[in-house]
Image 1 (cartoon, helix red, strand yellow):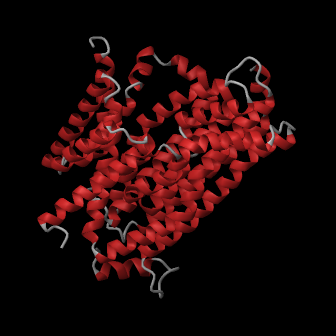
Image 2: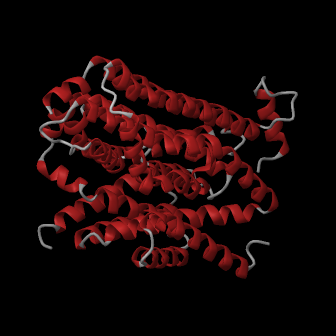
Image 3: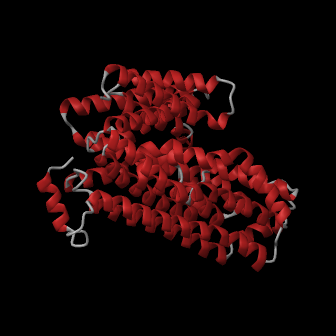
Length: 238
Length: 236
């Protein structure tokens, strides 16, 4: 962490926290929880308005039974993700990253890669406060870029797509294996052994006959267990 | 489908869509501010803040285009503003199309069918919008307790947290990469090439101490992987 002189300078530079015990990182978490929860609450309320509008203003209510049937059908396979995804990705996203990523979506294919790119660009060690704050810059910028591009694409829509040469669409068919492979490389290049172990666990879990939606969480849990075990054996965790 | 799209593309839905877009943008900006305020304490210099922002931007271009291209398939089914609302917040083309088809069948019609009453569109919307709030509610309620658990571990032994963070990332992406690469030989090539390109660039950047390469590495690796994967479709 910082030395004492640095911390005093930071506290003095922030008139709102000078004279209190709160360090800047405590403020970081406090602000993140406050704004994270508030923005999520507003979005949850805002998510109810369009369906309420079509049901009761446009007078096209399909009946609560139909709504319940649809929701139960959807929740029966996606419901477990509501709980597992935030827990699975929390250790890498951190507090602020979780609030950002679960509002904007596209966690694995955009938020995590951008968070890790930002962390690697400033040489932040995984799990450090530097990594957490650098990751927030990465995700917040990605969220902004994504929403701006979405608006442009929605308005320009099919016209813009038709202007793309056909090979662009062919290339984007490979966006997922490329980005997942690249991020794996980004984290494995310093500890190739752990990368190989993670891949073996990944393949083993992928081909085991278990409920497919819990597979990624299981793979994360197993990799954490094996890495902690090996680090402990090496005496790195003392 | 024609009448339905006219309703789905009406002004009211555009207004809702832009409110949702504004909230997403507002949240991103407020978190940029929060991070900027805490950057010095987290050992980030002003220059590093710029570097991190640039790296996030460069790396988001490829994925964002990928997301935008798949969303076009949804526009034809539920119209532009509802697509924007669903893809703009948690939810991907895959989850939202499955929610849409489940909502439609709950009403007893098929998505994209010729005779698609407005009540069926309402059923689709309820399923998508309520379904999406599952993640939002869990995150809103439980992130704080996950943070407290992390704090406890960090206080007891900061090295454990570092190992957990690294292992979680490796585990998640090893699984996601495996899942994609078994889709076919071209997917395997794309994944392996992107991984190799990334390792080579990061090693070279470390060795020669080239920091700009680290900002661009993900964007380059993505482009190299996608191009190679696509080119091999002509020979495999």
